Length: 207
Image (cartoon, rainbow, N blue to C red):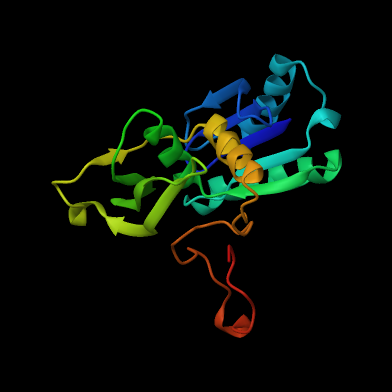
């Protein structure tokens, strides 16, 4: 079984079987309560699916794009759960999971955005699905001011990410033997807080 998590927008957790069938999903669409919500969501989806942590063989976690605070909660929770359960960590670009969801109902190219705050959106483009059933990303993710988004395009301005599709993307990728992305969070924005000049040699906070 795969446990799937995403905190790039709201907070979502799901249990997906190796064939991609969703056994349970819980979501909180509040974009600011990730830390308070994630533990309860994990507990509840495991109970809903009737499985124990030992049954989880992989933890699929959305790596964004998204704000620093939200992303780090989900990625940290995924890492800790995978370590404790002896499961494999399976990073998934959150936009790729959204594109998979969209292409299950539509055909053709897609421009996809999610909220980046500060009057900006995270934007990616997709041409469709490949022979393995995975979305083909042609550009992005990139950070774009809202005023610069093209007015005439087939675009989905998504407001939250379903962990079920994080898990389904991971299941498809594993079945196809695909290489997974790095487990690094996609912030796409410089950190708000950096070290003082006296510590100029240190790494910025949040990098």
